[in-house]
Amino acid sequence: MCTACACGTQNGDSAQAVTGGAGAAEANVYTVSGMTCGHCVSSVSAEIGKVGGVTDVRVDLSSGAVTVSGAGFSDEEIRVAVEQAGYTLATASPAGAA
Image 1: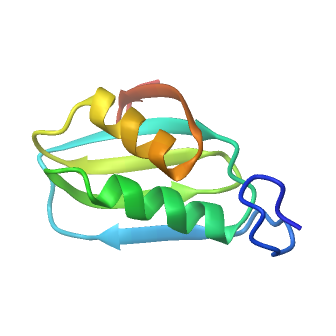
Image 2 (image 1 turned 180 degrees about the horizontal axis):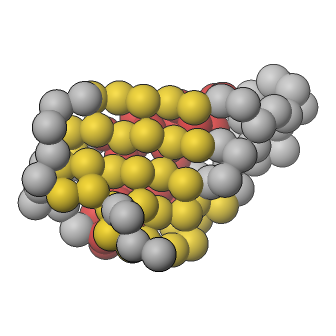
């Protein structure tokens, strides 16, 4: 059973969610801790997708990396969305940053 969201699914590390797809003016990569299954990925993607200006959300469960594209959103808005989904935003950086 998934211990993070209690959805009843088996833990796994292959889930990846992608929403949106429009060309974006900026992209930031965040690390979200606590995700353990596809349901977790869906929850995080859905909440971040509600943030104004977000055009694309890509979540890699195995690494916890969440790439958010769009324009006009802040790291604080993304943090609040992640917390709404029940998870923790660990780090944030511009896409492509080392």
